[in-house]
Image (cartoon, rainbow, N blue to C red; front, top):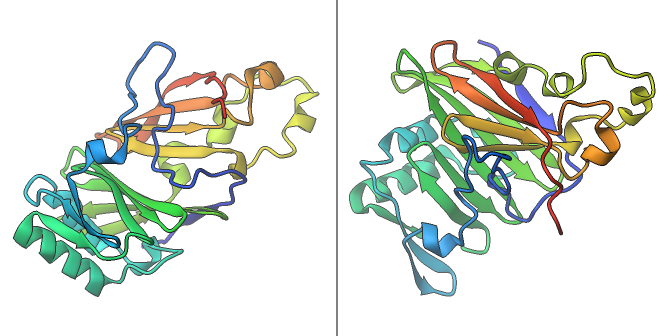
Length: 257
């Protein structure tokens, strides 16, 4: 079994980045704006006091994802500690009550929890987990630990409640930086690609069976239209091949500040 961790050094981050900040395509295909609503509209939260929240999570509806969170190695939480003992207590609290008590709202906050994906704010960063079910009832599991100095992405395949393989990013997605380049590149593009690395891209794993990788803030159409097919890629998960296939490469408008 091999272990592959992709560490992506980023230059710009939102204080909480859980995906789907601006994922609607030009013709509204595939991806909506699922988690752009205020948190209180997505969670059933009761504020108990200044530092304690009661957060509802239905155990039966979310059992598959909850079970997978227990399986994860400590390395899936690269910038913070969520040890297995603490995860078990959290899990059992939800199992018994269909809610959990957040006792440290200054550090750890649940942003959303859906059957296929969840996001937690960790201090001024965030941690996400997303699952994609395959034809043989295994799951491709992607975790993304987002901190001020970058992303750490881990990918696992889980079956029968066991991690059976650690997977590389390129084996599932290919090289997205090459995928967006025009086939016949003008020579003047070489200079523009000097800073063309992982740090300029953001990754959105929050939509069911769809992943978006984009750099609309940096790779603007005005500057790069002669070098690139677009600044954003939508991938759709193929449950039979267990890979993410390109659905669309397009130009996404730069988000206004």
